[in-house]
Length: 273
Image 1 (cartoon, rainbow, N blue to C red):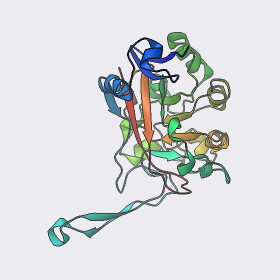
Image 2: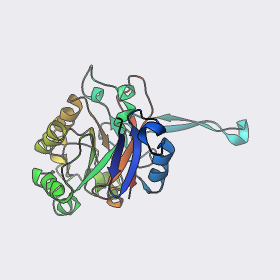
Image 3: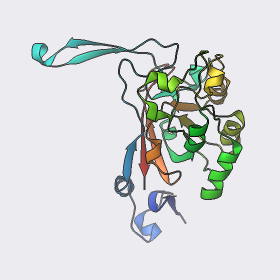
């Protein structure tokens, strides 16, 4: 006997594959990828990506993007621009090799790791009261009490609404008179739970860094190093997390396949009920 594999995302149920059965063996109709596509396309798509351009907010050590027009429609019949920017520009992927020699580069991330259940842990109210807020185990526990255990293989996003400060670089950095950055971040305890206990695939946030501003002021990026050291990737500078539910959605993370790439701009799309 061979069985259908039924995957349920929130209120939508879709047959996405089966264990090698023919129509006659299963005694029912065969499902196809077109059936899965029809279900997916019946839902709402939310772009979690900032458009990038020269002058956007970025890590303090990065140079600005340069855009040069090489050919124009008026003169040449077509337009080609040359874009010069660092890999970690705009909404971007940080592969393990960004911090750790010998671990995976952008082109080595498996495509199966790019389509995941979307988990959004919402701490924006706490961040509004304290810009230095770091996510706690209590935040994760509260999410799981509402929605059940975080699924293995999920993408977990930290919603802070910090992206509403885009594209004001000074507002995102939130530097005080002493030069100290004040923006939220993850905690070691939460990341250990998510990656080592729940088995998530990747995580993301709206700020320029995994680590809170109080740490990055001192060039402490130990939490980002922790994630990447586990050979997982992360996404930084997400947008529009206020437009997606805490649970029940999917996320599709895409980026160019840069050979030996240490990072690159990404396009992140949520599919939600």
